[in-house]
Length: 121
Image 1 (cartoon, rainbow, N blue to C red):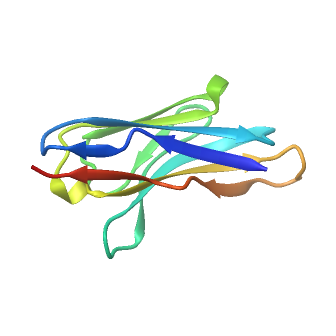
Image 2: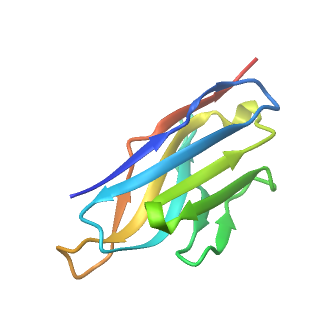
Image 3: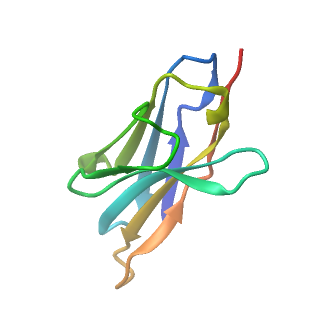
């Protein structure tokens, strides 16, 4: 069994910063990509950022250099530093990881339970 647990969400004023963390644990042989997605109220889940095992990053639309994704392979963790937050960034943020368990020949996608980020004055 693989578990992803996010932390670091909360309420922040416009222009503020937040840092999210996600740690994967359990039956893990290897982790490929690790990503952050978000779902705004009433909207679909959208990609925020992805980081490969060797540190290459990709960002979704509307991020515009405000967010930075990183990971620590020794801790099976991925992070999202969010700066210059805007009310439009309000969403539930989900951690995603492409993981091969010891008990499986294939990589599978796993999701965290989500953490709420609210940007409001």
